Length: 612
Image (cartoon, rainbow, N blue to C red):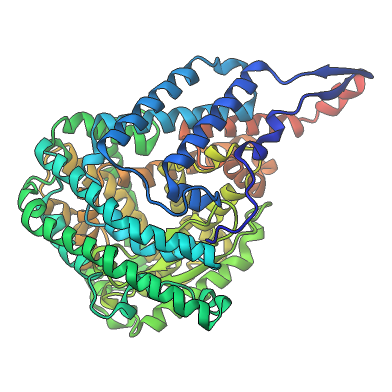
């Protein structure tokens, strides 16, 4: 993303909350109403918080097209982290003083999202998650090579900012090392088993040939072309200088720290319960990632029930394809039969692209409103592909200057079954992550801070719900693809069992691997990668099935109440039109929508209106 653009201040997105006069007509008489004071107070607080977050997080500013801080990285010193927590506590105190019942509907959404954001940030500080800034799949060292794509530099000013950030990486890395040292002292370290490849992740960026550095390779060709040969030549020399003086030495220093200090200090037990305040921390993660009050035991039992149901449906498909053997033997057949796997990365990518093309053409059947922001398909970068999962999605910039990206893993093709591609692609792109997050990025009625909300239960619940939507637009005609959909659903149901098993019930890593092997069609490689992901990211895996079950239940209830008047396009638009909101708030909004639909289609309504 380049920075030479007109910046629209945060409050300009929210003029509807600041309009001074509304004119309405009741029984032929015009009345004037000023917006209530609570709405205005909340708007001012939202603007203040948003300005604070943009100043505190230069990468957030980059993502939303704000020009400030584009030449620096954030200050992650302990003093700065403490200061930010103190300020957020003051913001929360002011927010709690605003009476929710006096706010308009859209402002109530903004208030709830801000409350959850602030309370979540303060919980992170209380549990000292800043002392564990890396795991096996994420962290500053894995994110930073995406900087060229994140910034998309075009002009000389853009590249000056890019180079300044490369030069700032040395300082930033030192701060991350100090945080991790604090984690060692506090007993807040990752399990050793999941960090086994972390050294190679870092060392992959320590290159002798600078032309092989992702900090050069990830710069778009058109960016260099736009500058012209002479300008690009000068800028390349400056980039190489920053790599030599800052980036590569920082990675070397971080690799040495991992080798000599951090990895030897990593813990043996894999569950969060083994950490200081671990059980309290895990209960907080459940609330954070599911947005509802639910116990680990209930989540565990839900996963077991869902897997029993899914397994019964799998048995029917096994019988339909006339496989002679048990379901476990069928799963092993699917894992090992060569025809179910692509022979080249190109075949995998092309097959996926065709699925996406088909899905794009059928979206109007399910949605009245579609996003304008496009998306692309890319391979997961090689340096992280062995440690990560089958696919992931990179959201678009909220200012529309960068589209979304569906990243597909082409490493170890024998673990990437073609029969799961339909469900996987519908989940990651359309009608899943891309459609939902692109619509959210384009929302105008919400404050920018609300458009940045990322309630995992909603986002991942929607994406899992979207996999089943494929049945309504012509997918899964092949029984193996439908089995692939079920295997993806079993994967998410198994997460409820395994995540709670590891972090609450004391399961070993091997027990989790064995459960996933017995209940999913995932390859052995994927199962290990998934279990290690759950170990390093407590609670996040609970969001998928929790959210999907909630959305599916709300649709079923709406269909039952509305009967023939149920409109799936209108239902989906209502679900998505407020962004990624907590599940209790979604339930309230859908209940209101159903009531409005019943009123609209009530045959006595027109007669009542005539009497008026």
